Length: 104
Image (cartoon, rainbow, N blue to C red):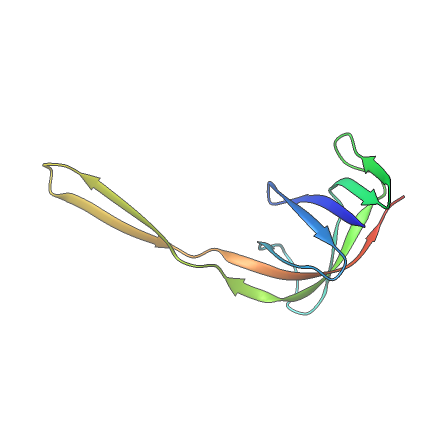
């Protein structure tokens, strides 16, 4: 059984006991999160598809911690102007473990 969920304008395919990294949500360091934007659930041979979301369905997750992603470097340059700019960015991510997928 697996599900396709949406969070942070991104879609993730998740199954029970998977560990995923999503953009940081308002969650405590050691708590639980319920993701209710479920797009699709495949259970055995049956597939449940939402329009756009499945009503009453959600994915229960456990928060394992807050981590930082790798640094992304953006380098801006204009020729013949002696103009250079180097910018770095690290995104805060939430590490989640999928506990259960519940469909209605």
